[in-house]
Length: 88
Image 1 (cartoon, rainbow, N blue to C red):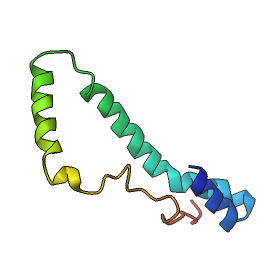
Image 2 (cartoon, rainbow, N blue to C red):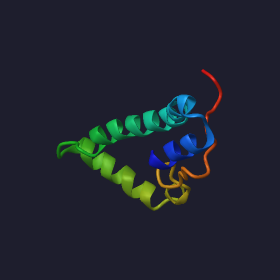
Image 3 (spheres, rainbow, N blue to C red):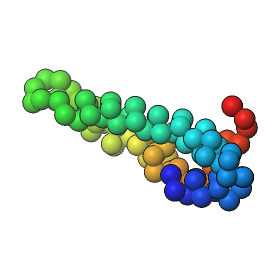
Image 4 (cartoon, one colour):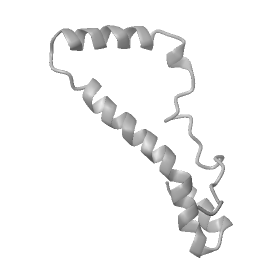
């Protein structure tokens, strides 16, 4: 967040920088928040059949090529994303 805010403040007049920051960050922040909520359910199942099915699926995923693809959380680079400077 700080890197994107700094870039907005550096590139834009102060009266528009915060709006650009919000337009730039909101989609990603919403995506991360939704994933976090889903993980809260997935990773906190009580012991039982549903938990065993989840564990088996996670084991398969962790051993797959899909797990080796770039993760949207860790591959994000705040210094390279395009700033959303258009008026909304």
